[in-house]
Length: 389
Ligand SMILES: *Cc1c(COP(=O)(O)O)cnc(C)c1O
Image (tube, rainbow, N blue to C red; front, side, top):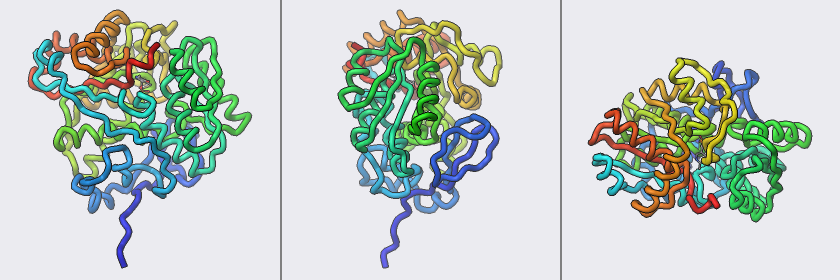
């Protein structure tokens, strides 16, 4: 008899504040303490078979890491080909900044042209497998488009709430996928409150950032991909445009898992959270030594993905930055727009404003000599600039 390969080593969910365990076979949102839940795996057992060589020959998308993703049955996977984005050397910007190893992870090449699909592919697959019938999310724009696409794939209704000034193209995209889009006068937090209220009332499954445990699992695949694309090493520095923080916290989690699996040692890339000066709660908390953010008043920035005055998982982001000896950097809207245009015109990738923010932040870190000339540096372009019209 041929023994079937293990599909997942997922064991349980854990409260990110108290460590309390939660059952994985039921629908779970946040913990009793109101904190995000983290998926945990039996890495001690996975270590025997789930090694980098096991990935050889698998398609380059997020599901190649399925043993460390939560789906119990491959037949429940809803996929549009998410992940497996290129890691491109930024030759011109690297030369300009005097960096020999500057790379762009271009997430604009994902389905729906943003990295939000990594999280939604896993979260919607899990939601449907657990019996969810209607899906909902609060979004600055890209998360809504991503949810709408997977809801269409699953044949389930989706309800999306966005701030009134979300980019029109993103709203049109969600509507094209058949989602119901509601606008609110306010910010992402106001959208989140409306989604929570209606989810409670109508039994919708709330997929807002860190209100369920599985978007994080999809986002963590960016960490695994970097390891593979850099010939089984990790970079020295990762600059990441941060809103709710799932990308950053996801990669940080991936690195811990990779160490537990024996893929890497205890070294970590220095994680840099990039924000706009119009909404920089993480930078303020890093400077004051706070363990959590205080909500940023009158948050305003042209980069919708960065306009998060207070993230549910802020304490995890701050821990990730501090433990990796990273930083939080804020750049002005003018700087990030200039940098996104420069990145686009000099490297041939269509940078979004949030991606531009990473290049602008890198300039200041190079000026400070915080980044070394021969260090491997990753800029995340989290969406395609084509979506921002
Ligand atoms: C959502 C979003 C972000 C912020 O991502 P988090 O992982 O939630 O911090 C950054 N850039 C773009 C384009 C986004 O859509």
